[in-house]
Image (cartoon, one colour):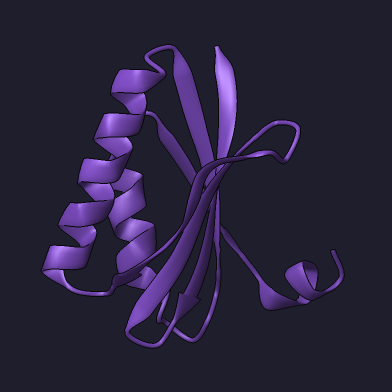
Amino acid sequence: MKKYFLGCDVSKGYADFVILDSSKNIIENNFQLDDTFKGHNKLYSILVDFHKEHPSSIILSAVESTGGYENNWFNTLGEILNIQVLRLIPHGVSHN
């Protein structure tokens, strides 16, 4: 099973995403989605299409705790098939 990583930079009202392989090569170029029902549905659609192209893959993702702005994205990612999502504290992120 091949692993991919979904980078997710959450801001107030939107998030920026990118999909990388285990060698940190960009597989899916950066894209930005609004933190709305429509934006979350678009993320779902993008990831379903990705899994169709890479059926034996798993995507790992993490969102940085940003005062609650990350909650909607964290919950959406946790509901999507083959996505493992973690919540990171800002202190750990800034030191890596």
